[in-house]
Length: 205
Image (cartoon, rainbow, N blue to C red; front, side, top):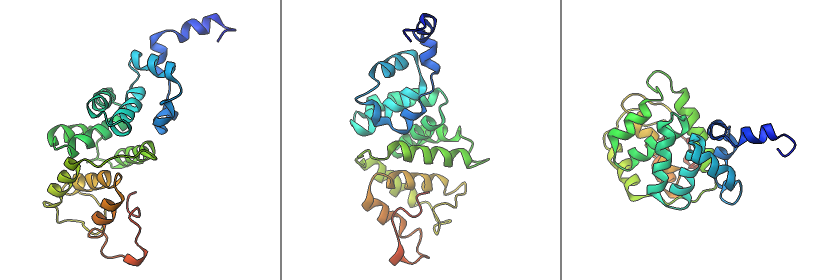
């Protein structure tokens, strides 16, 4: 940048930081806890929605600052960042704020095509990999409450209809955070397979 004053001046503009592609940091949110501080701060100040997503994960899950984390994730969701929409929506559902959570997830058009939802879920699993997360009591309550209303497609977590869709997504989300919960949740859902070969991660696709 020192060799090109014009580029240096351009990089100093907020619009550059607002639109800069920070996908690698969304894949590895913890990487920016000790590095890239200036980049994160400038991008955050400029309203970069990917940085709000990264900061939201850091605060909500890693630092357990749930209020601050939610505010960042909500900004990412309102900015129509798909991973942010899905993650914020699922958190709201698991916190018992069903109306807001469903309204957010519905924006991803899962009733027409599950492709976007499944892509977001895969991305979020990757973003949360390696982050130690405590399963909140409200998450387990949301799972138990929703499970009581579901009688369809219990044999496969990946078969989802309008009735069982949210239960299956909540199940996957809650199970991501707790190994014991994973084993407990999926046994009734996959009773048709050989339990001797069962891995609690088998049907988390």
